[in-house]
Every structure is written in structure tokens, then in C-alpha cells.
Length: 199
Image 1: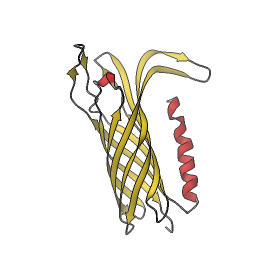
Image 2: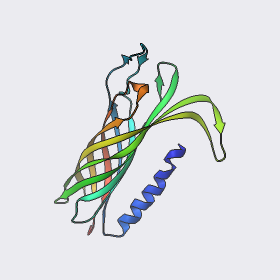
Image 3: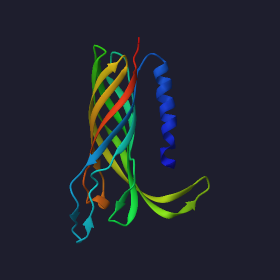
């Protein structure tokens, strides 16, 4: 999880930005799944598994300027439990992305966002042994693919600035050969908190 160490720094930066009372800051914790085409045989005659299924946990942060609906968003989503690739090797997909965000909140009760940006799909294939570098040890090998991301959500504030947020995310993954070059879609429901100016 070394590459996820940037997450605490991102959260700190977003929280600091929210403390300036000049921005709107949304933090969310979500749970959902990934939908992709079924397993198939590729052009070389090999079975390629589906990326569908499994519970995904996600964390996101969005900062928007007041009275101006443009902002920035960052999020990471990972398969909560490992899957087994072709019945042999445990693996875990992780998606992370950084986006431009267009969002609004109306009457302090409902809100919506659309976003687009770039990121990566990180496929971690686990091994029964650890390999150590200068700073840490790990028991997996990563395969990373650049991706584009588009997504949208709808926020409903259930209590003050606590919200429930259904969301959908489409990933355009470059050279996703491990899954037959398919582009997965992630659906989730998040619970979160908005730091709203004047609240």
C-alpha cells in the first residue's frame, strides 16, 4: 500500500483548505462494486477473466470555490477482499484518479457533481513471499495502467451537512490486457460530510 501513502497528505491538504472558510469541502467514504463484461477468450485463445464483482471501498475529497461551481476532486477505490486471477493467483485492483469537478449544492439539502480527470488502475498480484527495498517490504507485484475517468454523483443531505451520495464512475483504462482491454464501471453509495461556508 506504499502508493496510497499520499492519501493522508491529500486529506490534510483538503482539510486545511476547508478550514479557510473560503471553499466548500466534501469528504466521503463509499462502498460499491465494479461492472465489466464477462470473462472471454482473447485473440491468442487464452481465457481472460472479468473484472466484475466484489465489494469496493472508496475514499474521496472534493474542494469547490464558493459561488463558483468549479473545483477539484481526488479519490481512491480498492477491492476490499482479494480476488483470485484464473483460479491461481490472488490479486486486488485499485483505482485512483484526480479530476476537475463541476458541482453545486441547492437549498443546503441536495447537490450534484460531474467530474473528469486522469488516474491509474493498479493491479496488485500477491505472492507467498516478501521482497524488501530500502524503505519497506511487500508481498505483491504491481501492474499499473494509465486511465481516464468520468463520473457523477447526487448528494442528499440527511442531517445538517451529513450526506448520502449515489455515484457512478467510468474508467477508460489504457492497455488493460489482463482483462481483455475492457473499460470497467464502478457504482457506489457513499456517506460523507460537507464543510460548507457559513455552516
